[in-house]
Figure 1 (tube, one colour):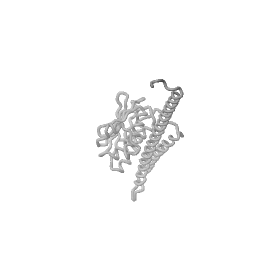
Figure 2: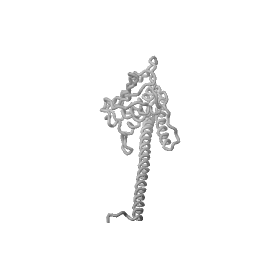
Figure 3: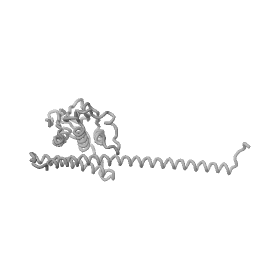
Figure 4: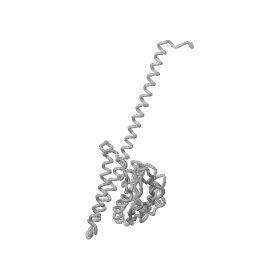
Length: 257
């Protein structure tokens, strides 16, 4: 009764065992392929959601400028400045389209480069000042970080600043102050909008591709992370810290206050 199995039955069991093992490995491999495909699809959908957010923001701001310029009975004191502001928003829309091109691999990754942060911040803030005024918000810049350079992507830093300032104008509780100081080789930029500011969790959390809000913070955080910096929840708004590449102390510090 307890004797050994006949050779043909033993061989049959071995075949069944190998077949089940092969099937299990095949299922596992297929699960891995599907998981990778789902991950790539989710990443693609997040990129598309971010691009849609950037296009809506840029084209909406440009439309606001055009509507204000064409208001009956209004004379523009400096039409060239308004044209520069519209061009800045169209540039932002172009960057969003280029992000879509990256999904096809037709645009190479933007390399890191030395960026003069003071000039970049001043240029973007000056453009947003007129847009803020159209929303009855006063936007000011208090720059005390000198001629500071950081290593990163100028485009990425522009996208980060645009989203953070736009959020402050749209969701804040009053006027917006952007101030910057340089301490121990790190430039700290605070954007204070008088509101409670985002929570620490929402600053670090990745926005869902289906969520109507949160994409601006995610875009800003990712751009700042790529520059070796960090986005923090601050008192009354948000704070950005960036390691400094160099600083020219005797250069006139830009200020639009």
